[in-house]
Image (cartoon, rainbow, N blue to C red; front, side):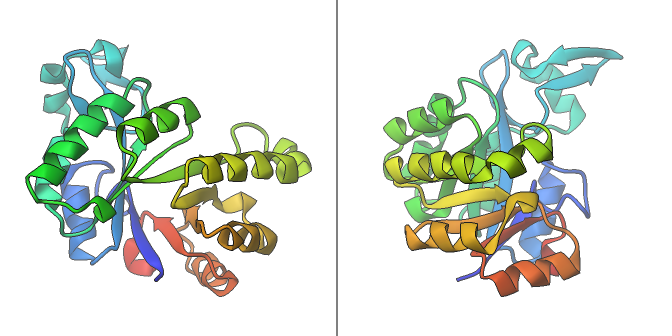
Length: 232
């Protein structure tokens, strides 16, 4: 199947990583929503992309901020989002912050136990391979996604892409990963072919242009992350 994935909910329609954004994505019949998580000082797993936040005109790290201060800024917890979704679509949890693998595993196990979700409904992904490997230990039954993206000048990646891609592909194989989530500027027909040959899904992020979406579908990708999932 082709996966229509709502990036941070439906970030092109409503503020990203908010309950309203995830509700909008559900109304658009996505096959999966994607969200980012950090651990705040008081112990809650919160859904936000950045690791810093501005409170009372002062900028602070999420990990050094209590949830009592974050809740006023329309920042939900992971449990808030899972309670909203309750098995109506799949959920891709990206481990954005450090030390998130264990608390996320406890929450996922809780929602599996209460029957709101099946194990097939979750995908845990990360750029942080250390956290992803820990997640694999805590949640071996849950699908994993290895993120690959240009973490520096694109020219650097273009020159070294075959070597770097092979490293990420081998990592995905060792984790028995479900998907390789690839930045849109790095996708080539060869990369898609090699990924799928290893029985790994080739997902692409974040694509909003309709012409680019059509091109990637023609290339045969398995899923696309978009701020406008209705365009998929």
